[in-house]
Image 1 (tube, one colour):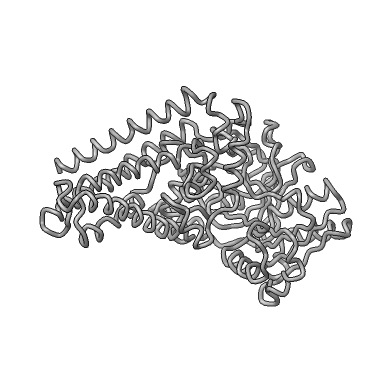
Image 2 (cartoon, helix red, strand yellow; image 1 turned 180 degrees about the vertical axis):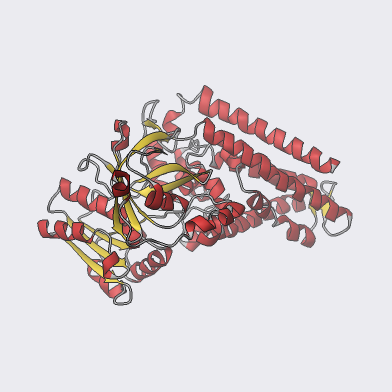
Length: 511
């Protein structure tokens, strides 16, 4: 126990000291001089986020320290080949060992990290790390304890197979700390020539910051090899890197989104048996400065527990004088809006954000939606047609039975008014979106939003048709963090039977 406590306190103290110094230097003392290097132009990392990150890092360090003590115990009992002396097998062996450990760590991280993004796993473990959208040095230490141990477990079979000196292990650990802090710095300090080989194969701060905002892609640790081989590299990576280096001037942060702000619920409207639209009328004008396709992050308290969720905006910027999210029953937050929220209630929210947006240079927009994935498309369609009523837009919409097709009336009205807008419903059990439905539009720009199965199928079809990934925008949404025990506690609430014949929440309030 004494060894465990000593390792824990020493490791946690030294890590927090390093992270604190880096944060103070980059985010506080010199932030005005390096502002144009900030990856995200919305500041979202405030003290509330950092306080949570420090706490999560302290808990995660318990698991890491337990693993370190276990490694020494296994070594002392002859299970592991961890050597105290350096150079026993020659300096070349030490160098090769370090390179091998880095390559193994990179491969292990990629595949475990990608697995942790599986919807059935993500919400209970890795979503805790992704609560930090605007990354900063403290984010690099903020992990679920299971993840903190899992990411390091690769060292056990390595030490069983080959001798490794404490020096080599220490070098790799120091490289890992530097790489982790660099990736979560929130500022891009790598020079412009890192866009070219061989440097372009290194993970940059831009690369990993995009992973936190776009979610499904850029899974690598040290190198971009695995993302490139497996087709999981986010296409905006190089473009954003170039944009950062093209910026001029000092201050480029356009909005401070580090704190939640109140949003008043104006009214609620049931769209289908399990979907409700929530209308907000914000007093802060910054809430209206959003792009079609972006989402709203809301924070509500349900059953004594605070939940954060992101919902795509179905309202159209510059067209509507309200904000609207359209919510399908799924978890605690959606149940709150569907069953309990009332006109006049207040929730907390961040300013709208997100990278899912129309390509203004495209001649033909083809949107492929599944279920409630049509929500951002309604915003995009209405916004684009308001800008250019002759814009060419095609919507292919996979949905459940006809009585549950979201926004059918609104889409019909838009199609009647605009000759270049068409939409086709594909009702489950009757028709599916196949390759033959996409083939006529192979020269268009595609946008995909919906269930993972739909996105994977559409991606395969587009690849088979020879459509470049550069012309495919995909929206990836993920549920917020759900504690394992909290999930069980909330099950009774989230499994409440759906009511198909109840009056609207606004009618209840009026009564």
